Image (cartoon, rainbow, N blue to C red; front, top):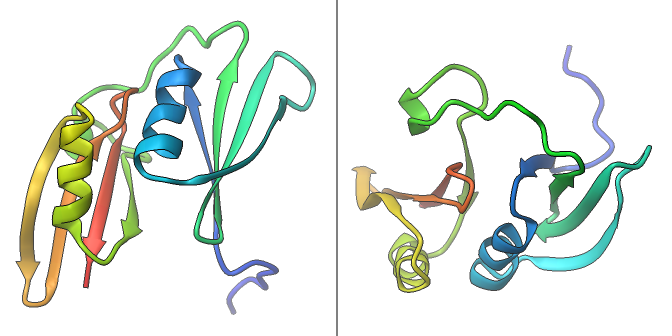
Length: 134
């Protein structure tokens, strides 16, 4: 039996070292709506709430910064959460926009099976963001 849901999407938290760089990528380059920024519950940082469709992306800047970082290497670099996927009408257009803004394209746009294409971009913190076109 599946769990009952009260929302048809997810909230994703991304802890970052550089909040300004993360906002430049997610808000300014990808165009996510940025309805609010608030102090972290319990103090010690700021949570920037951005909307990707109905999913909320929480860009979190902690103070002080955590001492550990996620292992580099993209999808094959380690176990655990390694990437997330955003469905878009054109992976080529988003890859071109990200490239023009100076972001690293880890996987250039390509068809992975008939009618399905992907591109993977690295955000300023080294996280992989996959774009999917069907």
